[in-house]
Length: 320
Length: 320
Image 1 (cartoon, rainbow over the protein chains, first blue to last red):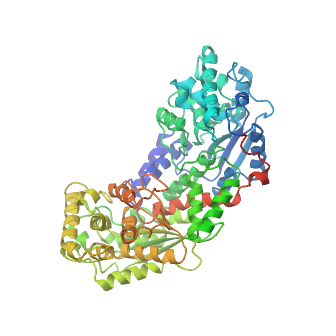
Image 2: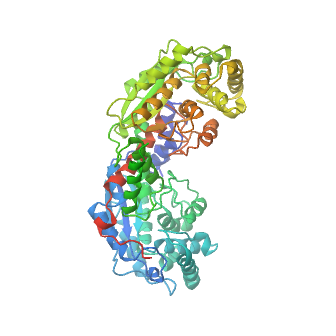
């Protein structure tokens, strides 16, 4: 973190033609951007949304409302420009990259053992690191993977404890019997893999998934490259939480773009201490909420860089 | 309201490549836009932010942290492009109009009698109607006026009752003695004018102000012209509430762009039954929160119009 750039942002905010603090969270976000881009003024000229897609062995247990074929079909839809994230990305003048992770080779069903081998997990993390390339100044992360809210719930249970039902929600819309199966799969997956869960990365390996591991890699690479990160909903934040569990400061260069109605998301946000930028009932994943939140970040930067100071505009300050 | 266009929006949402309802509030906002533009699909190609500026006699009682000269100075700043709303307007490709309302002739101090004559109030309402012009497809409303959070609090007290302190907050940042003076001015203004407050418009005339009356006019004209409206913070919403008090359906074509930390705003939003789009601690007025919220509305429209349907994208539907 470059505290000097962050401080420069704070000092400039005080001179702009508005009562101190009147732009609220926008002012904090500018300070955060400057701190983690290590630049003042901060800028968002080349935001990227990276969407990682993976398939999950546990999906075979009927934990999702949609068939696993939908993961690959949605990747095609991203490529063709037909998904929500395509429209939202275009609206922020962003660059959308879709990373398809061997969809024909789903992870192992984690109720029967580890979802990934050491090698597969390491490869997925390394793959995620590729999303950070020179020129990208802000990174929004998203995922696509039928069954991954089950994996995300298992990650949270493995990392932070509690009961399976604390972390399981409807995802894309499961209810009744399917929701019971989903909760059971989460409890079983964590119980079966418990002995191997000796650190947060082992939780990721044993009950996570390819796209979730890739998100971890992208967050790490972004930190090193001074690229601030916008997280998306439950699955994305659960992946990020692996890093939080390993080091309480590891997500300081990340904000959460939106709050998902998935009940586990609010619980998780409280644990990692993040207040989302938006709260609009979005529960689509695929980086949609994170990408929409870029609009707010861009607005914050536009105010910070474009506004006149009291002196420039000859506006009087406070009376008292 | 054109329920047919609203229904067409709902029907299309169901076919788009996402679980039903997964875009949350974005889907509702699209339905609302279609209903009030009376068009499907709805569009936001020419949004306008109209900022009305007026001065208040009650400001002479020391109820604000800033001198009244700031109203005119900020109008100059809007014209020069140096204010927050200029940057936010540019970010949404919007057209900013600033309406300066005889700043050298403030309203009367309402603690001593009516703020405006019948004629002045009617003229201000009519003036506000001019903000709605052909080609504008969405209207964000804002205000600038030193002392107007005092007038807004008096409006709320006059319209909805309670005690002065329920509606008075720091505004641009008053505290201590000044806050006591502000609360007293609100209580006194409503007490003095109570006999004249025979209907909501009389409340507006006696304790409102030019820019607040203009906002009322703009909202009325927008309804007739089928232009949906985005309201801003406390002062703007208080002006709008005059119409709510007159007719419970009068603000159905309006959404509230953001929640201000001014305590009266949340209280007022509960009364008029509106959930703001953003909640980012902004308390600047000048249409800044409403204009920022246009980003979300544009994102909603982009998803609605640009996304592929399940059929187009050959994506499988729910398993069960």
